[in-house]
Image (cartoon, rainbow, N blue to C red; front, side, top):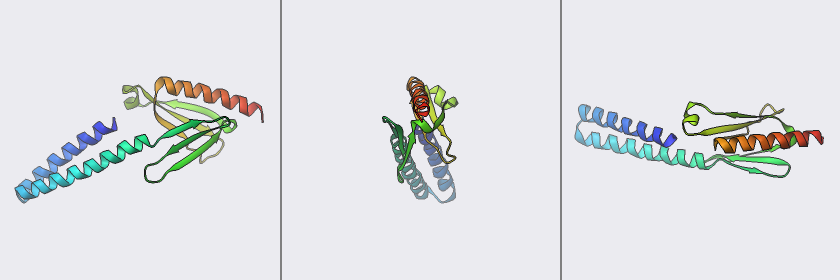
Length: 141
């Protein structure tokens, strides 16, 4: 979904940059402007692709590990017993692609464990499993 947005934006930007450069300076400047925009678009496309692939999660016996980040890796470990509730959201674009985001809420204000881009069924399964594990672990405290 982000790839389509990046490709469309890059094509529009290349067209505008090429036209503006051709009108202002001439054809050689137009070619350079289009090339610069296309190189920037390829870099953005690479970053978006790797950003999506960088999200991972692992369900362990006592906690959930969420890792993310392309340039700077971030690792969040959320103990099941500390979870207050699990939220599943899906905006209009996510709904169009049958995706959802799972967000874990804990007592810690800085907790930002979320897992975007899950299929709806997987998000519902994960929500139910985490809620059950959270209740079981919290009862054992």
